[in-house]
Image (cartoon, rainbow, N blue to C red):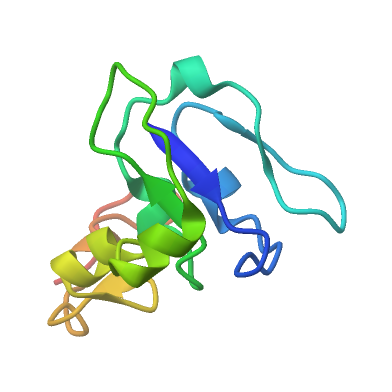
Amino acid sequence: MIELISRDRCIKCDACVEACPDNVFDSRPHEIPVIARLEDCQTCFLCELYCPTDALYVSPLRDDRERVDEAALIARGLLGSYRRALGWRGLKASGTEGDLSHRLAEPDGTPHPQ
């Protein structure tokens, strides 16, 4: 479950808001996003994965809240640890630079020429 958005690390890019399939966050102009619907979080880690500054912490505990201390999470290297574990760099996993499977169809839905 999403537990933390770091005020010090967040650059207000709203990547987490866009990545969340369950609409857990609310975007606010010139402010960090708000965890608005915590109960809807499915612990998918997409927000943490897409955060470019490691400003989020998603606890692996789905049904219980975890007491978190940001300094302790940083000291343990947990902010952004999911992204690092997957080898995610930028917005793609490492080793996928040549993968064009996301282009299986043209924007109009016709198959992409091989």
